[in-house]
Amino acid sequence: MGRSRYYMTEPNKPHFITSTVLEWLPVFTRPDTTNIILGSWQYLRANDDFKLYSYVILDNHLHLIAQSSHLDNCIKRFRSYTARCIIDYLQQHNVRLLLERLAFAKKAHKKDRDYQFWQEGTHPEMIINEEMMREKIAYIHNNPVKRGYVDLPEHWRYSSARNYMGQEGLIEIDYWIM
Image 1 (cartoon, helix red, strand yellow):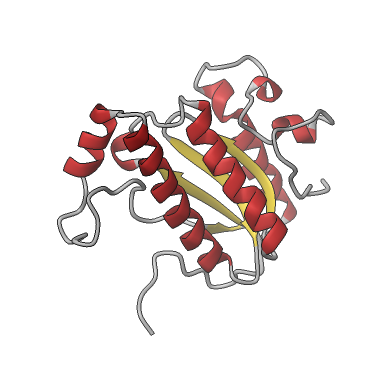
Image 2: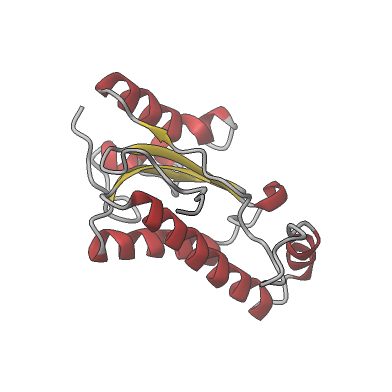
């Protein structure tokens, strides 16, 4: 069997996952690009056994806690689909600076494409107990606060913090009962 960057030893357990835009480029400053991410998660929740417990999308990376019986495949499909859609968006809107950087920084062995969007690897970390789940959800929700973008986690629009505060979030999530 071939090696996979997305392979998880126990995909049926929740995992903390990070995906970073190549060169930490600020692509998620546009609502349209962020909506591609949110829409992809909604699709996976509706059409796969994908559970999304927590998420945050910042300007150049995202964190999530997810679970699925085939999480490695879900993440692979998520990254492939969102990369294609975001690159198409950047081309349609003639965002040359970002496209030039995505083309320049593309790994030389990636001969099948003109651009690379995501950095390689997701560094999945299996959630092994309740304490770790609470810590990772808090980390995700406090990320925009730590960066100085907002004063309270629920003020960050692109996060599940609102959902956990009993407010309406941008998308539905699968709540982790703490």
